[in-house]
Length: 256
Ligand code: NAD
Ligand code: RM4
Image 1 (tube, rainbow, N blue to C red):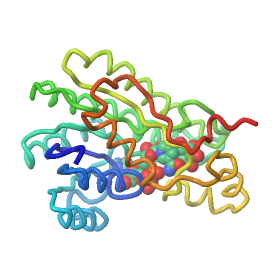
Image 2: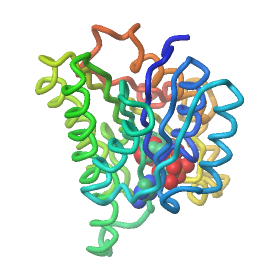
Image 3: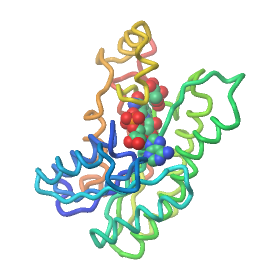
Image 4: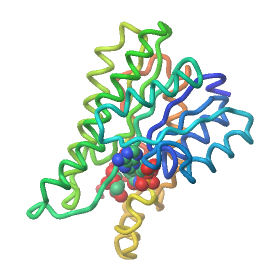
């Protein structure tokens, strides 16, 4: 029960890494706000997650709003406080990676990616931090960045800067918010099989290549990222701020 009675808000929580994290937080005793990109409320995937969380004995609500909007963060935090009176943890996880080559990158796809992954996140983190400051008990903010904050990708030139941006945002926010007891950290997943890379990894050759690049010989699953998120959210990490936690099965270090 690492998160007993804490309120955890997670964006992009109806699927993939966010969903696994939401479920693990509930198992660890938290009430959860599931933010997602579907209809304002009543999204099917979110509803099924709410039912799973309630079965564990915890409370959950969903909030549907576009993470690319600079106002979405305030809306999510408002709904969270309305339902649960406070927030203790904010996990910025929503993101897209529409694989595309560089030389013909359109301005629209570039802006959609940067707005969804980084620009909305900036003001969501700000909204969460203001609420935590108001409460006066500190808090934990976690950005789901990526190994792609550290390395490039020829089909990810619009994406990797957003992940480096999130890592940098957590470092600067750790400085800006330390005086309020608000910790800010980044989780950097390696390659985790989810909807975001389903098409990319449908190429068997690429799937096998990416698997063999890891030290552990397999791609990650969303549950592999949930534990590290819970750790950073919990009081076990009370002296951890401005840190980044690479969770990649040894992909990054495996040069030769
Ligand atoms: P996913 O596609 O399963 O989940 C993405 C989530 O983001 C979904 O819940 C989706 O609804 C939400 N989202 C997307 N666009 C949104 C929008 N406009 N408004 C609100 N929500 C929106 O993929 P995932 O792998 O679980 O990705 C979660 C995060 O993890 C992303 O930020 C991604 O960059 C990051 N990440 C993933 C991997 C990986 O290999 N899967 C690796 C490193 C980092
Ligand atoms: C990650 C990393 C993975 C990729 C996903 C979409 O940051 O680059 O390899 O599959 O993004």
